[in-house]
Amino acid sequence: MKKNLFFGGIVCIIILVVIGVRLSERQSQVSQKSVATEQISVVTSFYPLFFFAKEIAQEMALVYNITPSGSEPHEYEPTPQDRASIEKSDLLILNGDGLEAWGDSITRNIDPNRMSIIVAGEGLATGTFVEEGKTIVDPHVWLSPVLAEQMVDKITQGFVQADPSNEIVYRSNAEVLKSKLVDLDNMYMQSLSTCKEKNIVTSHSAFGYLAQAYGLTQVPIAGLSPDAEPSAKEIGDIVTFAKENDVKYIFFESLISPKLAQTIAKEVGAQTLVLNPIEGLTDEEVVSGENYFSVMQNNLINLKTALRCNE
Image (tube, rainbow, N blue to C red; front, side, top):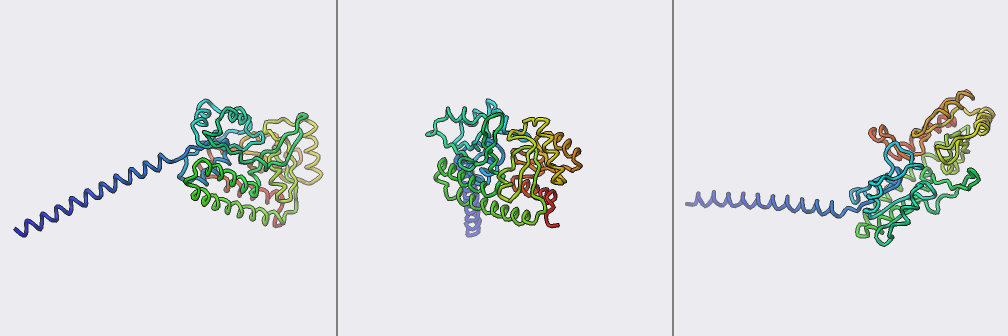
């Protein structure tokens, strides 16, 4: 009799343990579902903003990037699917200063009470160019790590507005990201402080803020738009400048044709290197695990080569 009671007790314990495990699994599933449901929806206009937003949000948000891999954001036009994603989002993050040709038309029709809108480059872009009789603002602020820190602050504030209950998480993640940008800035300052040359001949006028931050002089082949075609006189002036200043490298970009840079390099007896404005990554770069920081580090390696640093 005692034996039966003993085994009966064991069976009861086993049953209770199984029930407990199943309840625990059920609670875990509900909890996971709750977390997934609580994720906010965020739309960014192009890669650097997408990368910063992902770093700040981590698992707290679903982040969708408007400009697809391999596309150049200056001329990209959102698809109907892109526009639908924007309309359903909790937070829209733009660069501003004319980078998104479609920005004004879309934000004009958005109710700010329903969705938070952050213009990350607002107030940071101070460089201007005159093209075709018009004064155009240089929007490429993300290429300066110091200005990128300020962009991160603006984006973080957007997350806090859209999802105030997770403010501590967003601000904590943002501080980690900003510390990486401080390290990047220090790396650039130290590496470029010993360069024998200071002139960088670039495909288009994307590197003004980076050049200003580290005492370099940008000499662009084309204007702010990568698709701009320089005149024969402008090309001649670049060739003359490169020869007179003994420029050894002409920089080109990964998202636009290198032919013009290669032609000028051949004319002056120089070589070519990539200087990536990080306006978007190619499919190959995405697959290989490249990101904002790895591209900026590659840019620094090529700048050190072209400018004869540490010689």
